[in-house]
Length: 231
Image (tube, rainbow, N blue to C red; front, side, top):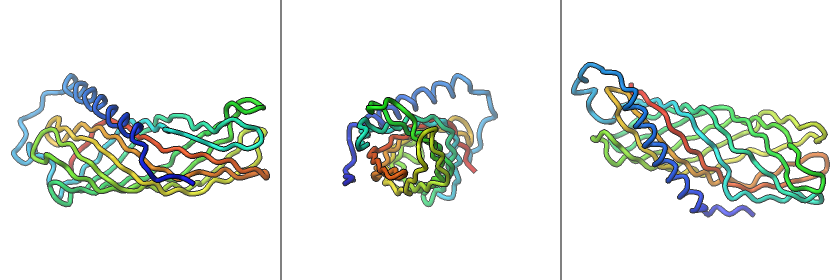
């Protein structure tokens, strides 16, 4: 049975990566800064109630503490790391509280390694994913505004394509707890730098097909950095 206890070593690594990526993002933004007209008083303000903030990032999705049960052939299921584009929108209910959401399609290619018949791919899985969270921002009036949040992520398989030699298989939809920490940095006017880390407590996944059933259990760490624009 899957435990819903957050695996803190993975969460600590995620938070450490967030700090590193935030520093790199801000340094690049300052180096590439283009002189702009002096912002108005409204533009100079921090994020506040009624603001919409659209963030675009490059993100990494990394499985942590993965365990699995493969059955007669032995070995283990391995979910590769992924690099993917990320687009998310947030609305500020108050100066300190915002809600955010995003949706997209994710492709995964799990494989089995260390089995008695060698290493091989299980197949390609396309899933529709949607997530939502509520965030608390600590320093809404400051240029650097860190935040924390909690929410949920839901993924539903829309296509599974078995690898050559593998029978058709099915996987189930998953609902995961989402914990996050990040920061926005106002670069100039309505432009912001952003970095975020999320820890997803993911339920056990079961691969069923061809009379066989494999199980995989892994939480996920999401780390991203990019820019945002306020409307």
